[in-house]
Amino acid sequence: MAAKLVVSCAIIILLLFYFFETSRAVAYINVINYGAKPDGKTESTKPFLKAWAAACRSATTATIYIPKGRYLLKAVEFRGPCTNRITVRIDGTTVAPADYRALGNSGYWILFIKVNRVSVFGGTLDAKGAGFWACKRSAGKRCPVGVRSITFNWANNVLVSGLTSINSRLTHFVINSCNNVIVQNVKLFAPDQSPNTDGIHVQSSTGVTITGSSLQTGDDCISIGPGTKNLVMTRIKCGPGHGVSIGSLGRDLNEDGVQNVTLTNAVFSGSANGVRIKTWARASNGFVRNVVYQNIIMNNAENPIMIDQNYCPNSRDCPGQSSGVKISRVTYKNIQGTSATREAVTFDCSPSSPCRGITLQDIKLTNMNKPPTSSCENVGGTSRGLLLPKSCL
Image 1 (cartoon, rainbow, N blue to C red):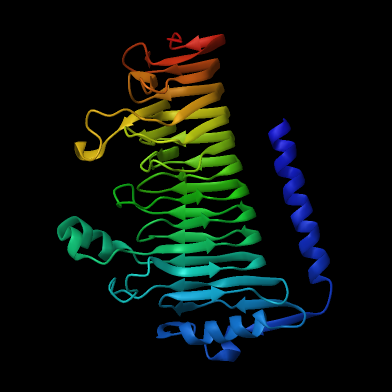
Image 2: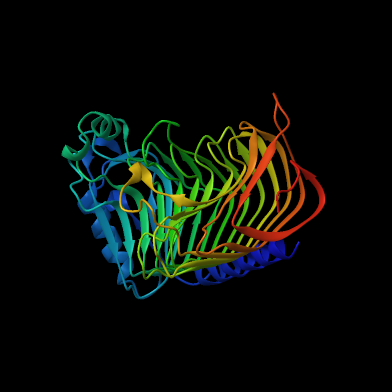
């Protein structure tokens, strides 16, 4: 209930501020007037940048309007700081070039950087990822590094509502080094076998809320990186995908920790994981603390509840080591449904930094074939209420 109240208040405050701002004089900027062509063939990168420049220097609140149609965009950077609040209203679709090499090696397709008080409403991003995925499968390192569909770097007071992203080449949506971001009612789609197509990635950011969103991806639905604080996720639908993951963390010795993370009222359907914390088996001074997973339904999800502190892909850079990431005060409450794996609860914690303060309460996970099991290594905590499988704490 407290988490719901926090989310609701944050959204209401931001929306009230938005409507207050837009009630003043507004500069209305239509990308068509700056030369953009909605035919999906004529490159519109420069017209979009001209529209952004006009909005950014506007003496009043500005609205950039992208009408219906398809707009071909190469890599584009919307840079601040700007003079006033900017709203981007999208009724159309932005389309990446079909040639996956055309976006270069910047790592970004659409980048908002050093902006404050920006709102994005509606629209579809089509990154046309299939060619890039095929390259990664066949040529590996001979491919470009790939691009994330939309990224916010060093941005504050951001609202993204009703956005759809399809076929991202890598991560759909990145929030990096930001403060006070609300993401609501977004839809992210990529095939379940598309490599590294995380839904939303948050790192080095404070005060992020993700709500009412459907995430169907080839990797983590939401991934949470170092330096994330005060993250609230609610009413999330995940699957296919690799679940909601904190991590992987602890690759570096000196790494910011993750704290105050809440996931409530989520549904996982056919996902490769449910709620997961993942750390490298390497020395690190990182940490994870004050995490709550509550009111969650698992529909045939693999590994519904997991802590894995022995992450060491391809057995490189970490054999024989143990994770230094300290995990504490993690609560799992009212998690129900079906597990696609017989082991429904896995706590594989570090022998050098055991997990502490883990709480299981009212867990009911079944398996279609055999009674579900749980396993615990190097973990301490408490159990209460109905517990299926039987707690190993």
